[in-house]
Amino acid sequence: MPRHLNWQRILPALMQILVLSLVIGLGIVIWGNINRNLEQTGIRLGFDFLNSQASFNLRETPISYQPTDTYSRALLVGLINTLKVMVIAIGSATILGFTIGIARLSGNWLVRNLGMIYVEIIRNTPLLLQIFLWYSVFLSLPKASIKLVWGLVQINIEGINFLGLHFYPEFSALVIGLTIYQASFIAEVVRGSILAISQGQWQAARAMGFKNLQVLQLVILPQAFRIIIPPLTSQYVNIAKNSSLGAAIAYEDMYAIASTTFNQTGRSVEVVGLLAVTYLVISLSISLIMNLVNIAFPNRI
Image (cartoon, rainbow, N blue to C red; front, side, top):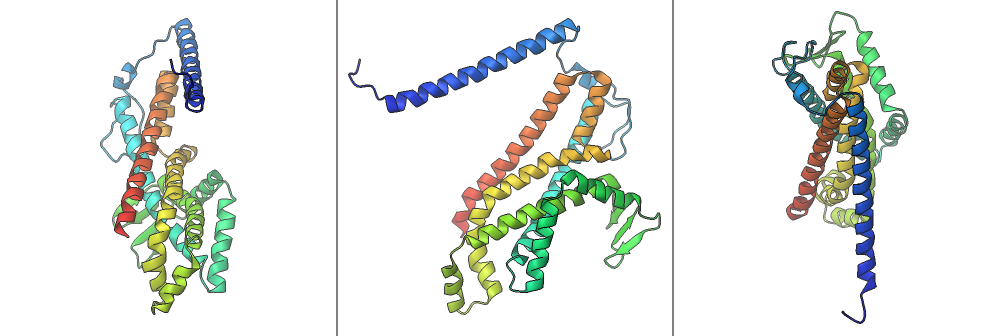
């Protein structure tokens, strides 16, 4: 046995083992209580209900679905609807957020202050309220279509028609609400990251004859991206999680269909567990992709 133990290394390891043991013990106690409560009510845990007939209609079905299909098929429809919202909202919020973030640094007084007003109003207003607002806008539209962008976009009470694709009001309101809300946070991420770059970079690029737009595009943004990506990842994860608010306006996403499944089957533990695992996998996948981008990006500068 050594005379002098390295307590600076041993104590942190012991503390980690203790904390991990407490967490595992707490999990075992909670799981035991759940099992006892379920046994008293005559309910056994299992996912056999997923093969039962769902017996409810869905309006927005990206894949074929009938009420005679199983709960698992219905949940798959909800998952695809959820992913559709996430992908479109992430893309549109990124474009809008970068545009507003750069506008907030503009030398033009009007553009700069319009960006500031947008950010301060949108990010200080509840997201759910904004989604309700956009949904009420669609519900108040006339049946006759309002044509925009040379007739390519048509909007009415039935939703949005764009290049032959139809988007229901619930989907449209959710995507617009998420896009506008999260873009205000992305704008601040972009603005702060650009300001974090030394002014010497601007001065050096201007001394080489670059114009402001060229400096921003070729010098500042490539360096700012290394700062932008980590907080941008958090905003993408927020979009993924906040997409569940679509249930408030009856959008048929994973959360809404899971709620219907729970109400019909009474399998609360299983349904909530499926929801938790699904959103966890989606969020971790977004984080993994962004981390890979963060690792690869410096090599391309």
